[in-house]
Amino acid sequence: MSYTEETLAALRRSSPAQEEFFQAVEEVLHSLRPLLDSNPRYREQRLIERLVEPERQIFFRVTWIDDKGAIQVNKGYRVQFSSTLGPVKGGLRFHPGVNAGIIKFLGFEQVFKNALTGLPLGGGKGGANFNPKGRSDSEIMEFCQAFMTELCKHLGPTIDVPAGDIGVGTREVGYLFGQYKRLTGRFDGVLTGKGLSWGGSRGRNEATGYGCVYFAEEMLRVRSEGIEGKVCTVSGAGNVAIHTVEKLLSIGARPVAVSDSTGTIHHPEGIDHDLLKQVKEVERGTLEAYARERSDARFIPVSEYPEGGHHIWTIPCDIAFPCATQNELTASDAETLVANECIAVCEGANMPATPEAVSYLSQSGIAYGPGKAANAGGVAVSQLEMSQNAAMQQWSSEEVDARLQEIMATIHTTVSEAAAEFGSPGNLVHGANIAGFRKVADAMIAQGAV
Ligand code: NDP
Picture 1: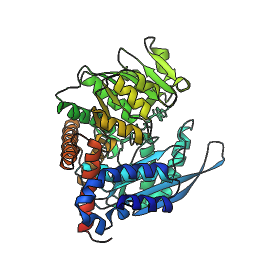
Picture 2: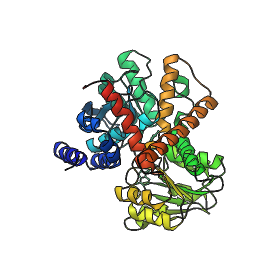
Picture 3: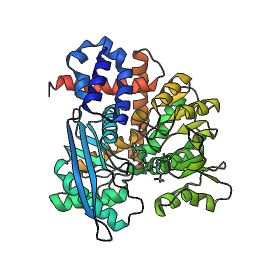
Picture 4: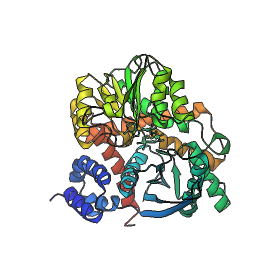
């Protein structure tokens, strides 16, 4: 058995039933083979065994009282995967599907993504199996306060600095921050994605979506293409998807579809960004409401999706942006995209493509930007927020955006160069995994067996 196979087998025995986590580890280890073959010291130093084991995992009970006075109990998680390159950094996800395997996969990916930004950031992730849908504002606040009552013991501006993710936006970050401050008496930069008047950074909300479009521009630029005029499809209708659509519109592309957990909107004239924001952010409703307002748009409910696939990926496009959730793009979706002459897939979400889809896209010859590299803009601007908090400053939107563009271009160069160095030119999946791993692994060797 090879070193990577031995490690995977041991991992399956020690952490059973964590499918998404294995999927993430397997992909990284597959990419690392040429690097591990040419650098035996990574094996001697047991780097893989060390990296797949989080430094610290905090699992806790979250007890809170709903509007009817009933006691509710949820599971809370924070996995501090690696502090090798800096304080642990990564979002919090509130979603009923959250479990230890999902949080570990997200934390593992985050370690390499954060390394690729070139910024001093460790990696981790957290969340709860709490479903915010249908909950009142006061219930959301109750839950956030109960969650932070335990989590605050493990945070600090140089220890661990969470941010948002699915189900956690500015409102939730506000309630979490308020409770942290009440319990500790400190106004620290312990969360990013804060409101602008209380320590937030300009451009943080927009950063993941904008950064993803900047990454797509880089992928196309090396192929002597541009985004202007391109037809795009963007899955999801949350923070990342909305800001991807916003940036695409501002640079003259035509996003024609978005989706949510209930269905897909196809709007051939181009998505109405203001209406999308109104429906999803203000009314917190479903996309069906969008089609009620625009007779030239069609809503396709999930029940009508093709078997083994998703309707949004059947809509012909030049560029596809998966920005919803993990494993939302299957092999059959990937085949449909390529058959419809899509020229690029750029991931705003974390691990949105299944392993079969990743393999198909990587060999298809189209430009393919994995989330680990393409959605790193969010965490990059989170680090800029940490810098501003530490210096008690606030930078202009132009300054933040200029830095974001520079960071995304540098990530693209870094992963492209690593891919070429290890024999897979143009394969940004291998490039991202190798470049991210090498940075963390070399720092771990320098810091000794800890
Ligand atoms: P949000 O909660 O703001 O939005 C998620 C959106 O995806 C919602 O519109 C949701 O629908 C939709 N969705 C969920 N499941 C499906 C599905 N199976 N098919 C279609 N749509 C679906 O989360 P974010 O936008 O913050 O996060 C999206 C992705 O981006 C996640 O993978 C996250 O980890 C990743 N990411 C986020 C970053 C950030 O800065 N926020 C940073 C880097 C990565 P509904 O509205 O019906 O619930």
